[in-house]
Image (cartoon, rainbow, N blue to C red; front, side, top):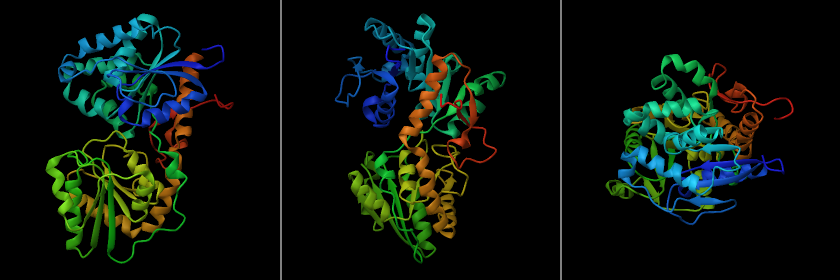
Length: 402
């Protein structure tokens, strides 16, 4: 710890330049930590409220295949730059790409680390890279804490990939901490109660348009709803990255917008009734929470993203990704309880402030640095809507706020 009493944290974060969520989290940790971010990419422009260090080279597809060679390169680069000196904690933001480096540095220098498990770890590395599963389990086992962004991913990893004899021990260090949403959305919560009038139904999707986000299944559900007499409009907001899906702009009931700022997006949410995103794979899905903050109930994927954060039917329903009939059923159930659900959507979205989420990491840092045993408490104490019998956990703290 520095002389000023602040934690010195090295963040190993390969995807730092590509999404704002890492900056949103780390910048809020600045109140209690001196943060340095290490990125395994060539340098690109990023916000630098703290030191951000790039490897100076890109790693391609062949490097992913030669996993251990790439990992050794990163380990040596960190050592050559002197980045292991003076840090109290290493925070690895992915399990396989960053966590293994943290694990090796821990073995050499004794620096404790925590590691996050994300969609790419669960649905790519654990699923396809069978030869690396043992390495992933080692990284989890050596970590002080293992952070899952999604309750569904925690269940999947513990049930499918962690050997039964290790589950109890491993489960004690695993916790679920969500991503947060931009304060802008929570400062612009709608004041008027939303209602659905007659059979006019306005759906919306926000995000990149590609095969994984599964807009085609939503379109099939729209056609089924139309055949039942509903007057459907479907806003799609986001870049079409898969040219095979460019045809959606020609569909009469689709209103397509390629890009917009946050102010415009708020307007689109307010013009809509239900948010639908049946992704194939999803780490978390910040857009679900953004939509909730604007009073929109959500249709989300079973076993992915936000599934498990909320009591089923409180703010929306989960569906099987490639089953349009599930989406139709979910939409009809939402309609029948719409005013209650739109109120609950706004209330539950308030739990996802970044400052509250950053405080959970602060508690983990504190307990690691003070060599306390990690305490855990029911996940529902942080996210109010989780069921009473939920087994998901967050790190707790003592009565003095530590």
